[in-house]
Image (cartoon, rainbow, N blue to C red):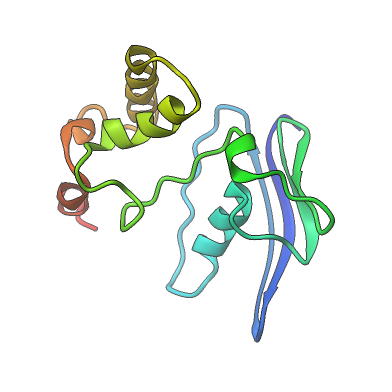
Length: 143
């Protein structure tokens, strides 16, 4: 499968996350669940911020995570963009999205254009979310 493939077990003390997820290339997925269900842990594993006890993470067929190997977050081509507190409060959502691209050497104009594409792809361009700072986003969506 090209896209995202996660088959992982993460043990953190008494907590255990056992998850299987397959997302086709170009597909958009929402991760929903109650507090403590493992949503953030799953996203951390995909982004390379947490390892797995068993299993793997593959993107486009490339193995990014296994019990023996973890590709560094900056080398994955995967970005985890949280609402708070991991966004730069002085930047707009659009500028926060472009930040990672800029850090990897992408020209500012190109990075902002790609950020606009992502905002459109996830349905946020129509509500001008890209022009808002992080503190202004949550109320916009009733979160």
